[in-house]
Length: 237
View 1 (cartoon, one colour):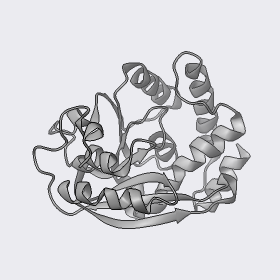
View 2 (cartoon, one colour):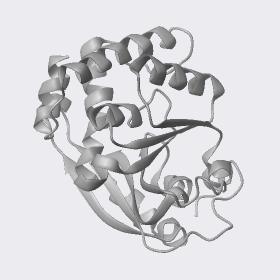
View 3 (cartoon, rainbow, N blue to C red):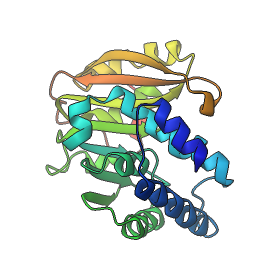
């Protein structure tokens, strides 16, 4: 896990030996389950360290330091647990909710959390369009994370309803998304959000630069959003 340790140091994150051991165990559980359900096409030890673990930790650059100590976040479309689980390992004081629509993947996530000894993690099975109307989840989170979820207009409708007032959505994207952001302006405004920043991430261990798109929740999301399952993707705002 040397690439992970070195890259994390470059992000200002010091990983203890115990945390490195959690990441080793994470890799074992991920590759074991991946032989039964499709979690990732990246399975090499070094590639997982950078493409999944380290890339996930970059979201910490867009999260205020006080929230990294004791804030709460939702990971929408968690899949293999990225970026939520690596962030939780690195910052154990965070409270995490992992949202995933596929039951087999949430079974994996629950076993993963158990095997890693993680507490303060809630795993929810269901579509974001439905769960965002649950009073226990709606407008409850300091941070909402999304990685490889959808285009920005769709992603905005699936994530901002989970954000509390003043909270942030942090979306992991490739660079060169000006047009995608422009198309999402109506969705961002409709959800009660505003564009805060596009943060470029450069780290030797990751290779090509990445981007973090940060949205801020400045107004309450109207009750009608998100629309019924499938509609955000079928008819983006």
